[in-house]
Image 1 (tube, rainbow, N blue to C red):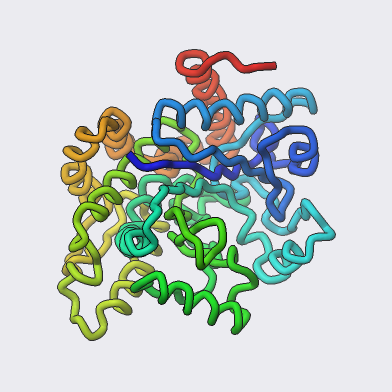
Image 2: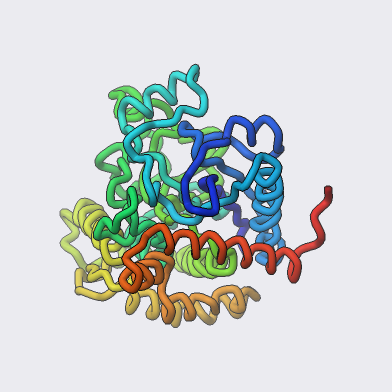
Length: 382
């Protein structure tokens, strides 16, 4: 099994769904949390672990600490979802007015970046194996977006997209190739920094990227950045189990590489795969699990949920062999019952009230986390 860790961005606000920023106070008073450019969301990171059982508690415990802290401030809570669902997209709320990088973010992107998400990091020590894994995950990233979509509302109304976050998120630079080697990634990154299309090595905002302690030179993990915030820790671990199993496959089988296995014309294959992946991301942001996609192997049309079901069948044996099939299994429930966006939109169609939908989601998430903490994790240390 590979090491896994998460970067979790979450909104804070009221049980009625109004998002209110406390990140400056949270970061000052609680260890383990860092601020984002906008004060309305805050981030925590889990340490890299191989065990899914321990990961589950590492996901839940910081939220329980944060919930307890917010209660000390007043009637405040954590808010699921990945956009400013009920309002507030007209203004940026700076968390650190003196940070020049934050100034650049606000002036360049506005509130399109004021989103909440989860970044999944998988440890891979060999840089060439990492690049191969990044190529495979890049062309399959829309599937993880489809599973995680949780942002159908913005400013109190449905937007027409299941992931409003990814439909507007400013992917930067605008064109990111499939990196053919570690040397290619280094050369490309240095060129972007020289051109100014990237402000620093962190300013690579694509669906997936190689990551490490000294990018682009020292790399040790794959970072999947496309997912909306998955509030259900069990569902998040299921999505992660699919990702890990798929990476184990490509580690064991070097031929499972889009640059090798795709039947698209060799002369334009790399560019065609990037174009296809970008188009699939747009489709998945729109309709998530029901999105019509094109398969990277041969360009055939396939629905996102059918592709995911196919991958599930393909990786089930390796997940069982590695001892984490039980964590992959909840993926079936998600395919059957839908992601957050699909469930929230179904509730909205009945009530026509986005606020009530979000209030119900807030209460459900809080109860679910509390039950998981009681049943599966050790008591919190005061």
